Image 1 (tube, rainbow, N blue to C red):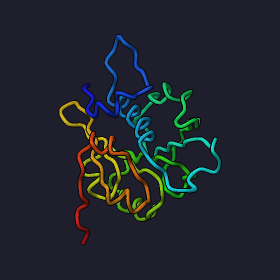
Image 2 (image 1 turned 90 degrees about the vertical axis):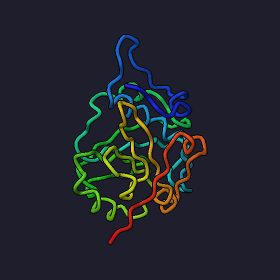
Image 3 (image 1 turned 45 degrees about the vertical axis):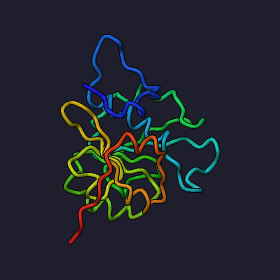
Length: 177
């Protein structure tokens, strides 16, 4: 599996065994971990300077134990927590929400329920960003690439660094009827 976005992955602190090629979801877990490093969160997103960075997974969890490599690491001196949820109604506060492919048919409802909540919405399904998600981890010819919807980021008050934008393909939302 090849990895795109060298600027993003060059700062990766998630390591994989040297003798085996990482799986698609090990690479995507590394991306999720590193994406949070390139985000400027809105004021008040964290209860305290030491509050944990919470990653949530909605729907079927495709990562398996891929986050194990990051569980003892920090982002901006914040510990990392991973939570899993079946629906928006079950969800507790988080900072990065990965919406699984299993939720593809429910995506419009999920995005409507979340509104302009200040959380980074990441997915890996076809046209995720064009449908209103913020960052899509697209797989193109065995390479993970980033698609970023700047309009969705702006609505939520989330800013990303130019370094992240330079590693991504910028997409626009499809017009809704």
